[in-house]
Amino acid sequence: MKLTLLRRAKEGGQAIVLIALLMVILIASVGLAIDGGGMFLLYRDIQNATDSAGLSAAYALCTEGDPIVQAMRTAELNGFDNDDPNTTVTITRTTDAATSEELIVVDITAEKPSYFIQVIYPGPLIVSSQTTAFCRRTAGASSDIVNRYALRSLAQPGECTASPGWDIRGTRFTIDGDVWLPNIKGNVEFSSNQPNPELRDDPADILGDIYVGEDSTSNYNSGHTGLNINEELPSSAVFGPSDGWVEEGGDNVIDYNQPWPGDLPYDMDYFRPGGALDLARTDYHDLTPACSSGNKVEFQDFGQNGYGGFFDDATNTWQPGIYYSPCELTLNHDGPDMTGNGVTFIGEGFIDFSTPPYNMTAPAGLPLVVSNRQSSPNPNHCSEGQHAIRFNADSSYMQGPIIAFRGFPAFQGNHYTFDSCISARGFQHNGNDGSIYRCQPSTGPDQADFGLRE
Image (tube, rainbow, N blue to C red; front, side, top):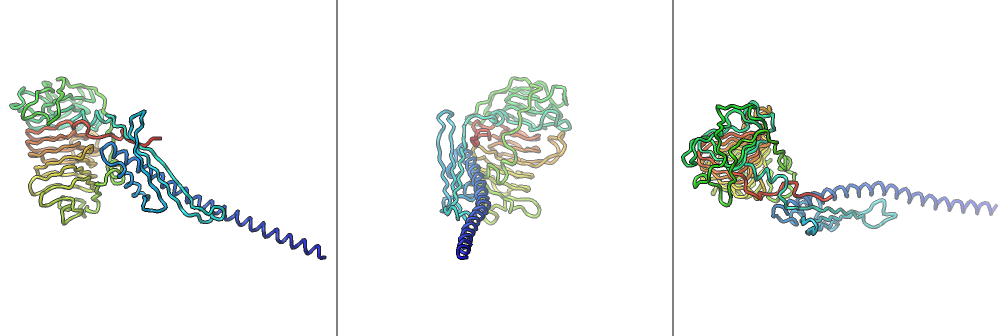
């Protein structure tokens, strides 16, 4: 009898050990599921943060910004910075000797405490991610688009058949650069009947080449488009190119059946809040809170007594920066010249410059004005409908690309100069003594010039 009781006592002790062991395994399994899931989520967040920081740093490299500051700022916006004792963010700048690419290496390491899994691993759980971003500083695919064309249509051949791509009227209008059109239609008046630039009264002179996407008979109106075109008038004191720029002149021929230049190197998402531009710039300002019930933002809203204090009412001057508005943006002032050096205006709707004169320059590598307003839902109406951007340009100077992704800018006024290559579905002009030039070379990188290494 004593032997049997002893055996049962030993068996009871074995069961306790087995149950304890099973409990450890069970808790470890729960910990693996819970703590492992937490580590996966943390890794995903760190990976997104390193990629975003790398892209913003690469963009800063290509635009002469501070890549270290931009990368740190972007990492912080994504929830990781060195002020957190559990996080380490390291940014390293280097150069690839083989490709001459400038590189930014972003390392983020973060740790989280263990919970259930600490029964088998009491230490902290560490997650890290690394990404390498590059800036090539090459001419890039967009250099031809940015530097070659003074005016280029974003419409493709076969579009703009109900209205012209470019509706140009007025006198003594000079375009110093190439032009690309989907077709010849309507009031595209490119005739030249005065060889002397100072004396001519013809509608337009093109100091570059004209490329047309369709043949010469497609939507052609000989009553509006002269064949005596002069694409290579000499420079003059009145109509010469801007300082430091040498005109090419054209070949006196309109070239038909030319390929579409292709998409711009960026779309509207690039310019919106949360996009690459926002992540890369510390001076990006989202003006959404300033949109009134009338779905309009006016320049007064940004004065010292308004939203942000970005506009100086006393001097009529904008603070340098990027300004995005999801609603109509009205820059109609009532004082002296409105000035903005190093500004970009981005709008989902109509952008209005109607009380000249204006004196505006864009930041290096960025457009001056970007609009996403759709002028017409019909792809065959390219210079009719609602303006995307309106300029009353009397005695004004503008420098920097102008983009209307889904519409057309309308120019009126006299004696103005725009160092502003224009990319839009269409274009309207009615004025005298106006000049539009190609954008200067090296206006900035396109998106193909920077990115993440795989």
